[in-house]
Image (cartoon, rainbow, N blue to C red):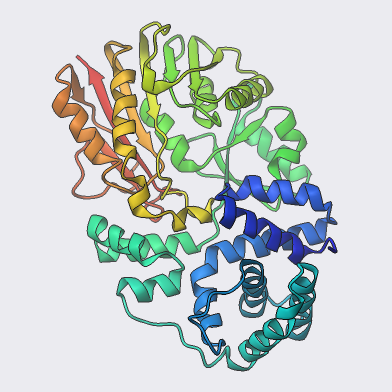
Length: 443
């Protein structure tokens, strides 16, 4: 098989679909195997994420070009058609005729020579009919699903949870490209010094205003390849995740725990807020992820961080009482769809067991909080069952804790019907990803 951008994209998409792998990890693996030139590597990424983000919309167009739309298609052929349709409908880098020819060659190289004529016919029909095919305009879940390429079942779920208006605002926000947020490391350089360093390299860093070390990087390529990253002057972290640390508000000299810490962004931000003074224990279930936390802390010069393996569902037998506990639990991830587009296709019914796990972790975490200490529960999802219902149950069943008011700047809007110790961050409300936090203080 030729090592082309489309072949690489098709291979990566097939792996995500067949093995349900994380998109970023799958793409990195395929790009490493294909060893493409920088330009082709960039096109592979565009096709890969474009198809993941627009799959339902692409299939709507393709269905209008098939003689027998109900007939099941070979997975490799279908993915090749989606890649080509994405180029035809949303990109203008190649002439349409060249896109069709490339798709025909791709299916041949995938061993589906008998489908070459079929692929050619479908795409030629799309070229003729693309301006005639009209996306549905209704506000029902099926119409919205086609327009925003989010499953109708998830849209119905959000409409019931957050209302029709906010649901469409969520869908519109997830169509936009997520900014690249970073946090400067105040232990090594001021934000202004980092900004100047990037400017010298032709890279733009804009301050967010709040939190004070947060900024948006533009035109930088892979941030991990930058010398400033290697020097530990910043780490990559979405603004919503940084706001969780503001709610936790760790202080220098305290003992703090991040009980489900990987990949470590909140651990790093908390340690920086503590001015690298005190103790910060970071736990994770997987040994490899613990290693990533250790490596990141070393790069950033955060020697108060101790990273250890632990199963939070089994408790924290060797942990001393802590002043502040961050309980950022594993969740369905429906708030980070812009960054992990494959999450949108996760069946809502498949996450029904998560609240039980999350509550178990929260209960265990609460047992090691000092009297007067702070406990923050957080997720990166938009699902009341994993968010406010877990928090409400915790307060109901633990009279040793009281709600602690969450206060953030007015630019970050709270849902009007929310208790003041809870905060749902919507992707359209001044935050970036969809996050949830609840704060408690031990009596």
